[in-house]
Image (tube, rainbow, N blue to C red):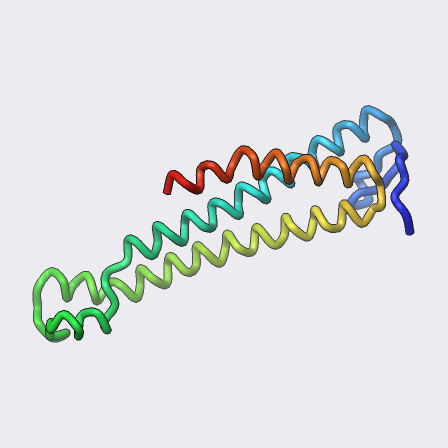
Length: 141
């Protein structure tokens, strides 16, 4: 197999069949935006994980180190009892975002496996643009 510069290609699904230069330009734009979205989701996952870990209460092991008794009834113990549910919800959200990232990643991979050079260049350019636009936001956590 080798890459070809052609304006005729079928991408991902039967209904996404390209037969004209305008259709190819639109398909490259869609794939480029998918690659930008993929980069954005990568950064979003990192920020979500950071905020999740920052919002959770101190672990039980730290409670023992601090000398607090886990059976004492105060506002801290009420928040500790909500921590497993909160952790579950945060972990569930992280898992959903991960599944979305994997699905988009496989769509991009399958688009590149059409061996169309224009689509490949769209993915590369989209990844570069996405990295350039989104990664500075990672520093503003």
